[in-house]
Image (tube, rainbow, N blue to C red; front, side, top):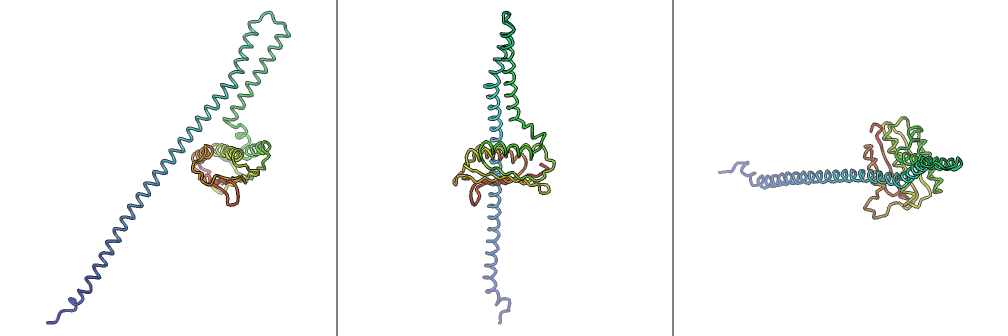
Length: 263
């Protein structure tokens, strides 16, 4: 009795079907493993992002606290003694009945001098808190004044190029002004550079800020950011902007910031 063709093909199809089944099971297992690895990676990325945000928050709070301590120290060490001496001079003037007109005029001049000194200290502290020229002159003029002052004090060449920036919100103007001051300060303190270039361009709904110097750049194995860079990161994060920084291919340091205008 002859076997049917289907029965003759069975020994051939069974191994082939087994191989296909094993491959299918392997693909399913690999896909499941890939999804697990992807999920673990996403969790790790989210954890890193959360840790980074917490670090930025801690840095921002620390910077604010340091600024408060510095202002309190300035007020206590500089303004406090001036006001105390002025008060003492006024008490002496009030209690003295035998002073000649000449002596009384001298005491009044001293009180006026101390009062003017107190006003100068108050103006300096208030300007550090809120650069008044920024509100009246705008970002471009304020940066021109800042870079000119830094160039004169350090003999560096600072080139500022800012197109017509249009109307910017106060947080963006103040943030970029503070960032520029921090970057210039870092260059002066650490970079040993003689040239700085700052470029600000407005492109549609973004403000592109580029900063470069020709100094020695960041250390090759720098793993810990200084307080200056952390402060800049905190300000960039507050503007919902993006920051890229590092060493130029040739020489020096660069920082590239992209700020959404609607931030």
